[in-house]
Length: 538
Image (cartoon, rainbow, N blue to C red; front, side, top):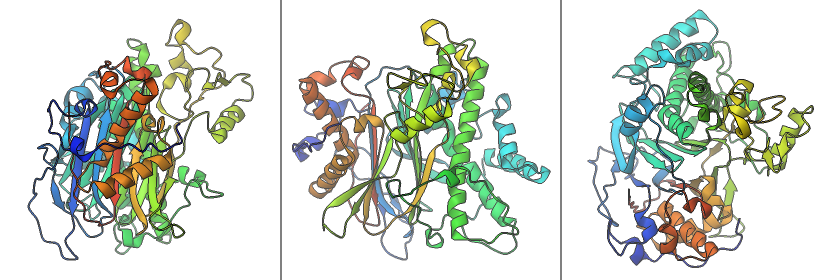
């Protein structure tokens, strides 16, 4: 990781090149994904505003929406660049994810309107573990299982469930796509002012990242609906569990002394009939929904791998990191598994105008001492759980989605020869429990940067915040996510002794030697009015 801030930046004249122009920076033309979204907050009483297209960079439509005043983001942009050469797999869930669901969800150039739960009605979970898992996770009583069946069917129907929460919306705006083995996803509701973002950094293939893009958001919606139903079982009325003014809990940030989220990881959806209804319960339950949604996706993916590993043994080594955020009102909920990061930029009292970088995620690799020690402590009878800086000599990650051969002996047995892990004494060696937290957004918080580890191979957290901050100040109509990717390409080219054009002329696959797939989302917090633009090149 480089510690010094690079002083050179992309000029605004470069950024204003039109899509497809011969004069456009070559790395911009190679972007796999680049999208933007601008909110329009006009005052306490907001009437319906027709979407208005605007574009300062390259004739790409960006939706201008009317958001509730409770929304704590004003705009966002996303960008992704490939380095790996990988083929999209179309066999997941009998072809439904690759051939039907993802093509309908993906919109790499801009946000577009779609049904709030477009994929639940398409997935045939009768051939997997999903339905039985939903009913078992939904509760141990017959009444809970009856509810899970009813809710599952109603969510799969075109009309969706009747809800009083922020999920009560028929349409959402969605953008996203693939860049090498990475996948990115952003979903927001004009009507209710909430935002979901996911970055799935796949490895050893894109199957796991594709599966997450097709299922995780839907799983989260399901469990939040289930949470609401559980709340409604108690006597009396209640307010939405995600209404920001009703949630006052601010969980310690990861870099705070004594921070622990073990209690969060163990959280269950409680029965509130006889329990006091508190803000703390709401926050922990929302985090529980995120965790259960990811556990659901992991169980379904592993089930699918077990069914297909005889014909496709490579699936047992496929995995992905997970970074997901849910932003609503004055709260941001964060979930991560692996080494992608969410960085919060916030101002400090001591130094006015200087932004501090706060990492909202944990880094789950053997380079993290606490993670390394946990692997060693969990396998006392294995003389070599970590070999040459990798778990069983295979993977630097200590937590990840998928990667079944390091979690189950029978999946490791599906591999042959040198691909198989020797002496897999006491699996699992890689864990699937995520780090989770919530943070109450304050007036001091300026923006959040989400990035796959490819970004942080070249920039520290502080550098990322400085680059975005300076860019926003100097380019009020620019695209900060795209700018970060462009800066990364320049630094990667400098490190390799190439020009940026020479680097980008190296085909994907071979270019992985010089940089990884990189995916970035920048979310501007608060109701700050700012012009944003985005571009996309396929």
